[in-house]
Image (cartoon, rainbow, N blue to C red):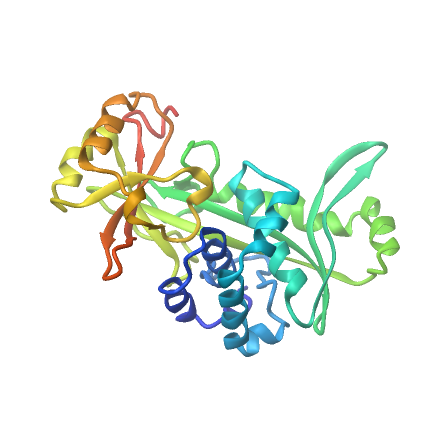
Length: 314
């Protein structure tokens, strides 16, 4: 089941205007399509009951305000610095939901314990006009191998899999708020009829030079890229001669990259990076950049470059 999506065309328009990296990531977090449109568990957009969903121009105006003065989002992120992309994604959601009209953030990352042992955390507890909600958030990057089954889609490290994530949601994360151990904590927060749902953002990456079909249930509008082995890089790069490619650090994987002229790699810098890339290196995300009329460089394509043993080794 898929909850409401907000103004599918709005994100593209905003990314042409927004410049601050954290605000671009914020816009992508709130407005990018979910990875899956058909799921056995309930999927619900956290802003579904907010007027930002019904009147997306208000959301666009708020994002523009954050871009003109990003001190608030920067201060929020600085209060709890994170290194993991999934936690960064959660922090962006929390910042927006605290500001969203018609939505109350009752708690975030609420630990549930049994005899002093932590059973897990509830990502978000919200109250809005549609009721009380326990929401689990995730952002994932899955690379397709040779099939449409969820088990055929692996994380860049080859340990995570789409089917395992969906199973973990269904069997552990979503039922956690219904467990006896959670009732006391929820009651203390005056939450007595909480309904569980999730929201899964991210990208699907398709193999090159071969291709594969999307996993069952994928949203037609999902964000996507390609992946290839190191041995195929030269052949792949030759399909777009003269292109500017460069890797992105992990915390820059969300919104399409926007890089000013001073930050763009030369061909020599890329070649030096490729020359020092270890054969057994972890998967690297690279983006192809095109120069716009203002002299900035915008992402037009992204690929994961994986070692030649992937997915057998990583």
